[in-house]
Image 1 (cartoon, one colour):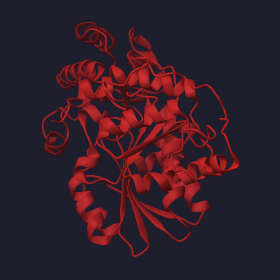
Image 2 (tube, one colour):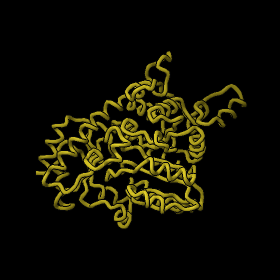
Image 3 (tube, helix red, strand yellow):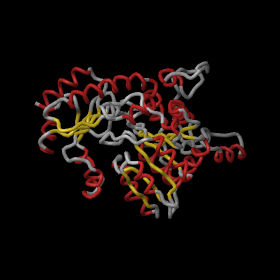
Image 4 (cartoon, helix red, strand yellow):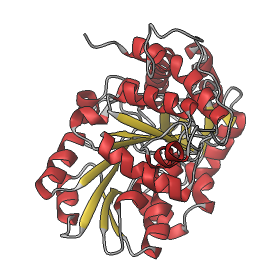
Length: 384
């Protein structure tokens, strides 16, 4: 019998009959004492070890990683200090000078910077394609392509990548696949079920859910996670035990929160799509998103839209909002709002921003779990 998401979230990463404290202890230590030199040497070599040195592993970190892996339906998981630490560690673990990556053009600005700034300095090239075009993915493949990088739904335009098509293409050429599942969460989408090799999250977002931690997670097959771990212990983006505990706390209520995020996201998307002051709306729940309907069970709380009147109108709307706070990030209990073109101006060059296709007037709403009618009323008064 397969447990449902609520049960997995509550009990994931532990035996439900396990005696002891109901809440995972915070093992707040940097190192662990052992009985012998042999035990010390063995601990240093144990993949995903949890009783040697906290950069190598820690019981609280292991519990959090196992909880997310259970939700994603993966063999193993590993936690790190941020979502970008997760993405960068994947890249460093599996890419070498001379390798090539195919990724989508519409993705988080930090991921774009990884592809266009850091990896080229290490001798790795990248081609970015329109994620909804299987022909572009196929045409971008080279003999030296080692990784296909996807993000679905994408940030901030909520575009959808066909996971099945990407996996089939990768299988033809023996290429590794990795997917950013932050926007969907494992409640709404489980990329491993479509054959994706590695899944990563900015656990700062929905998994944590309370704007009180920075964390990242990678899940996948055990042999792949061992390679990620061996890179992690060199680069060192370790998550603190206390933040791992906060992550575990957030995971326990994830499906409950996602239900309200989904409900609010769909209601806001419908309201904006019908509003005369709105030019266009992006959300996977809207008509025409057949791929999203096929691979997602819910559509999340991020909605983006372009108002009539350009960037000036967008700024005025954001200024008028009362419940939505102007802040980066998403996936928390409170509603946030940003204009991505302004937020990412310090992260990407003007040319890189232009290539993303982000309209300067685009507004991204990270909708929380407040009462639906209150959010709709706030948006209505802000739009005038």
